[in-house]
Length: 331
Image (cartoon, rainbow, N blue to C red; front, side):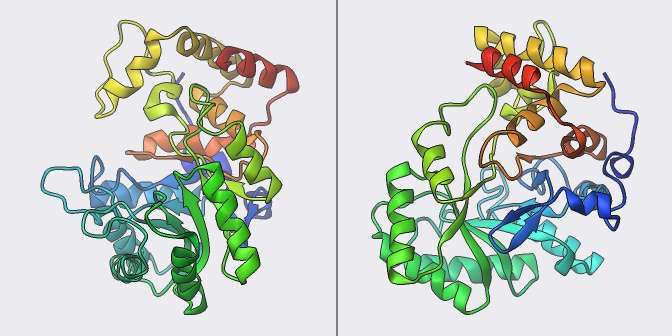
């Protein structure tokens, strides 16, 4: 199935009440149903392609953009910060900083690894420079750093909030135990608290979030913003037995074809997508959006043509029977 509508057709003009009514609270922030992943910017999408995707995403009603200082240091010739630089250049050229929610992360970039207070404070200033802004809406600890005591890094993050450099803080790649400890510390010490969690979570990777981690999020009213929402592209449905896909993620995504669960999930996605007249990717994101605690799944688009199926998550409501079918296929 091919997408025939433009990104703006899918979600409506961002200025209309309909486009904004689907936004969900995330701490003091309000975010659209799809968080646009910025990991491809400065990697598989150059600046011009990235600007086109960002323009189309905002035109389609989106306002939530995710990046990290570490994107994309793994690419030969890159040193990290490329994605933030592209987004910063886009924000400056469009003059729309107040209209979008920018999320970035600290702790994984070589030279700024870990969560020591000195690292956090140096890294945030570097991110602000690349993003060409004086504040970050949502600042994640990219990976937990158990060599640093919880009160130590939370105090550093709290300092950033008090200084106006960061509006809200969040966590990614953290254990349920350390997350619980962090939330308790914030409450006891009066420090900024995590309002969101970015877990690895999708239809072929449920145990990476469901269970203890999801229970902590639910108990403390944290918003989940899942990454790998489309399992490196597998859940778009473009990976099929005998098919060849031109993508840097092909190896990782294609491994799911070798599992019974992967094949069951594809079949269930096809069934539900056909019923809704939409793409498997839309259904995979809609399943995530229907899960308890999930505010907005993250998905990236290398081209404008990939966006409509992602933005359509905001207009698809799955029935109980469809959710059950997907639950059973992915179990």
